[in-house]
Image (cartoon, rainbow, N blue to C red):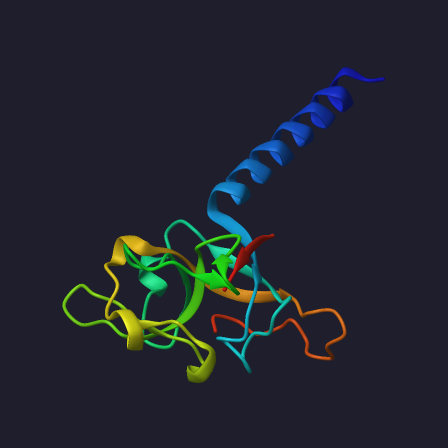
Length: 150
C-alpha cells in the first residue's frame, strides 16, 4: 500500500473520531415519556437536542429540555421517574427567568405549577424530531420547533 494512501486513511479515521467527539459534546438524543407535549411530540418520540451554544436559540416558542426547580420531583405513577428531565415549550423570558409550558396543559407539570425556572436549569434546545414513536405515521422533519424525558 502506498504511504500517501495509508496517511490519508489514518487522517480520515482521526477526523471521523474528532467529529464524533464534537457531536457528542454538542448534541444529545432524548426520548419522550408522557403526554405533556402532545400533539407536538408523543411518548416514544426521539428528539435531537443542542446541548452547547443553544442560548441564542432560547426564545419564546422554542422547545427545551430542562430540569425541574429544586423541590419538584417528576413522578411516574407512585415512584420517581427514570430521569428528572422535562421537555417543555418556552412561554416567556422575563428578567432572566424562563417560563416553560407543556403543549397539553392537562398532562403537564410546568411553570403553571412551579413558576419560572432559572436559566441554568435548561439543558438544551430541541432542534428536530429524529424518530417518531413506533406505530405512528408522523414524520420526523420538524425543525426548531436515548435518555428519557417527561
